[in-house]
Image (cartoon, rainbow, N blue to C red; front, side):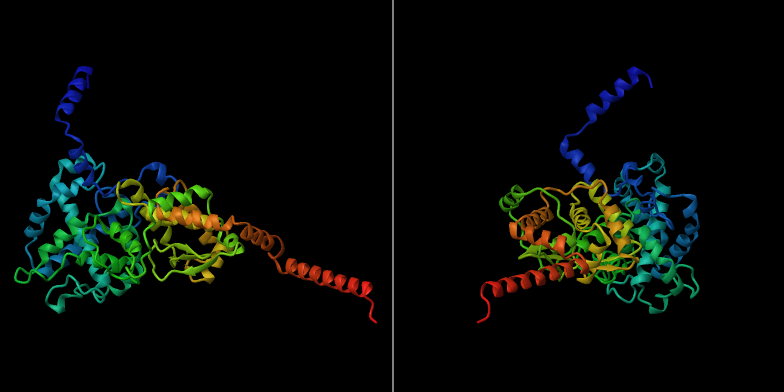
Length: 447
């Protein structure tokens, strides 16, 4: 491109440039992102699907090709079950195809040029994801998108590699992990559009708008309470919001800005480890809610939500943190939670202490492995100074720096860290008492 041509192009773009409100509308459409290399370089495996591709970013990768035949088989079962012409699904997706494209940040130019190819990918991936959700939640979710004929609910062969009981046990956990990677998301607009086509025209209330949200919640968080979500962006967004949902009865009072700044001015240090906090007189209590926002400090008691740590935890949290980092307006609650947990977990003994209180449920093995996990999750993240957890940071710090609590912590840390140290202190106290008694009898002899 010559210099003059470039100048002409820039001038043309300048003339066509809209105001900030039009730019805002364009940015609002984006919800799925490629994770930048400065983030993925720390742990490439956590962001890259291992079993299945959903959407354009990892489409056609050789290691994921084997799943494509399963997608096609799932599409045929989906169409047969709901008895709607295939053309209806194609037409419905074509009507929203531009919005679906805009949902992906930095979408490859080939998809802009090949709209039909993009639609084909969306329908295959969307129906496959819906079939996975349906198979995993048929018995648990009252909005199940099944056909009226109960005989076709379980219409897969008993030895199907994906949708049989064997597949649910051995394959679906890996598919779930890949479904919750930021680069592997499908817009909820797509899933809801496909479900809408399956509706019985004579029964418009057959599937409520929360149907897909409920299935995603049940599949990804089987033990969490299913709640109404409203409009969601994609399955990872639904999962994140389910982690943050608070029962109104257990909801904490909102911290006012004036109180927030008052607390911040009193100290600006990070929170000590759980063991050190315990030595300073702080006790730990399991929250009544599983919400990651259920962290509070009152009267020397630090309340924390219970968390299950398993083999999928690292990938899940890293992708949630990446989403909060890249999507403006998503919030920072998950990032703040990880930052806080990293502060109070330094060593295996911190994990052991939290486990003894029912806060950490360890499903990956050693306490040392859990400590290492939380320490690795917090690399290159910061705590928003306006977050509610920053107030808890300061409250805990201020409690620990009170003279009596500092003296208590130093005493325990120095003299009561081991049984031998405790015995030495008791022996010293005993000898000191004997010395006093002997002195009294010397000064005031009997009789």
